[in-house]
Each structure stands twice: as C-alpha cells, then as structure tokens.
Length: 283
Image (cartoon, rainbow, N blue to C red; front, side):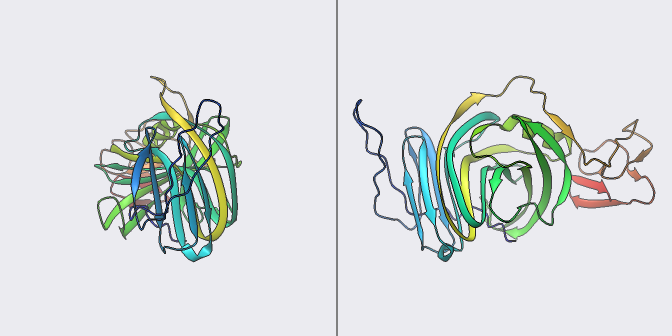
C-alpha cells in the first residue's frame, strides 16, 4: 500500500453561497482548479489529486462533499484548521467507499516532522496492514490500535523527506461522533512517539485506486481537558518492566530511542529492534 502524502495540495473546489435566514444551505460548484487551499467561514480546506481526473469536491460552511473515481489514483480531501491542536473534533455525515479509502483526522507536525492519522472508518483495506502495532488507546467510546512506520524519501510538507507516520485505527468503524485528539497524542507520547509543532489538521476522506463518495460536516476547536486520561496500553502480550530504568524489557516494550531513559535489554528471546531515531522495541 502506498500512503501518498497530502502535500501536493489540491483541486476542484467550490464555495457555499450565503443563504438567507429562511433558506436551507445549498452547495454550489465552481470551476475546477489545478491546485488550491483556502478558508471558508473560518475553516481551512484542502484537496489533493494524484491525477487531475474523476473528482468533484464541494465546500460549504463547515462541511464538504466529495465524489471520486479510480482515475484520480489517490485523492485526499477535507476541511479543518490551518494550524491544528490537541482539540475535540466533532463530525457527522456519510462515507461510502468502493475499495480502499479512509475517513480520518489527518495532519502534520514539524520539529520533528510527523504525518498522522486518527482513522474512524475505512473501506476494504485496513491501512495498518504490514505495520508494527505499538499498543492501543481507548477514547470516545471505542478502541483504537496504534501503529507507527517510517516514510523514507517521501513527499511531505517540507518537500521530499524521511519522517515518522503515526496511526490510530478504530477497531469498530463509525461515521460520526467526537474525536478527542489529545487522547491519541498523549497515548502516542507514552509509547515514545514524539510530535512537534502543529501544522494543518483536517477531517479527511482519502481514496486510493478506488471510487466512492462522502459528505462530512465538521465542528471543533474546543480545548482538550487540562488532564485528559485516555486508557493506553501496549499490545496484549506485553508487560512493562517493574523498574523502567533497569532490568529487562518485556516483549513489545520500548528499549531505546532519543530521550529514552528506561531499560535497554530485552527479555529472552527478544532483541531490541530500531524502528526510528525516537523508538526501539523488543521484538
């Protein structure tokens, strides 16, 4: 699976005409453009197509609708914030993929450069396939499996670069609800998955070599609780060392990385495997 980064940003955007107080909101389509980002009623929007074909996106006030076909190869579209944050994002709507597609909170941080997904639903392909599971986080009435991988010499918001990619993938799909992003960010940090300064953050639909449609309304911006308490655990077979500064580290436990002060020797028969500069794991 190729996870094409979303930074070539974007095409085919339309803006909502302001309704009167008695009118129902309606989306009106504008001429497609080759690329673009912008703001509508305070919400940032972006659209990326690998091939400029087969995609229509309409932008409204805090909402968007998208249809796509396989001719676009990879399409990523959504609305949100030009600068993300650890906030509670609420959304509702429909997501109807035919093939490989994801519905996620998607964003980037810098210093370190990180691309991240909090995935609430997907099509016929689990985006975590082939990745190393780091643990789980329980949040907003569901359980998410946590994964990380490294993208090498891949497109990014800073050009071609090597960077970490983080995933929280919900085990029971849903389309609608609240995603408390701080719960995921805190859990990732507890697993040694460091983040940097927030760049953009959107509620995104991504389709890869597939077709489908989505219609999503987004609200958010509420600050996260000052001391959120997500439940975050490593994979079921792991047991943290009783003294993180000494002794052996159990299967799946962290055993190294920049800033790591815990144990570095894995329990037999496991060895410490480097995942990236910030995280090594007993495997």
